Length: 270
Image (cartoon, rainbow, N blue to C red; front, side, top):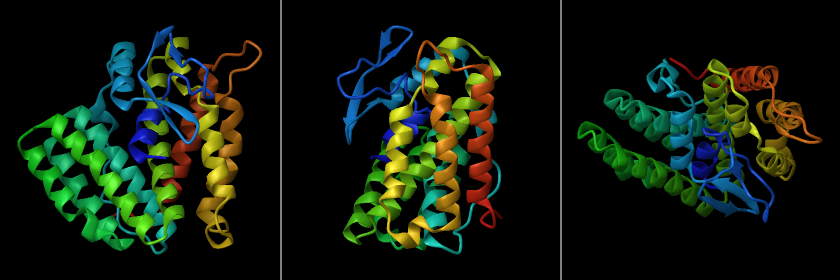
């Protein structure tokens, strides 16, 4: 699954979704259809449209959602891949905030983390383009370069037969997007906003990808922790028998995603 899609979806999220449904099922947010794409049989709304919905619901203070600190490559590649996904997600948030210096910092961090997992060569030019576009405050171009950076990283990983690490990059981006989305929805709770969190298909997608990983990656303590937490997330985002996602569900989702992000960032921040 494309990281851009995961971020968008999450944020995004939230998975963003207005609701992520099985193929053939209409995705709706308050009855309003969003442009969507199908990725590995999961229907995922277009990220840009999700941002627009969030703006209409609560006009988020994007700058306040930016993180501080300088993430550094971790000791193992699984953690670094997850971390890279969270940083690319931060790039989309910085674009929404139109924060030039933060986007430039993130562009440099993406390059450093890509180097740590052996794909620096594929993102050098893209990182420079992100920085140049940020200097020019050409926000649509910055967003496009972030999209392409992620695609370049994943293509390079595939060439190196590191597809499972590429999946962890996507998972890291999704977790960061989910944290942001739950923060936005929780700050001005409404049933409409909470609908953005209805994404059981995405949770199933990531759970399945982890289950299919080789024993070394699946046994990584951090990956194992995330797998367990996905099982806690699943019932919170599933809407069945007339149940709706509550304020308490949103807060629990925020806590879980925030805790996982702290685990990913452990020993990697300056």
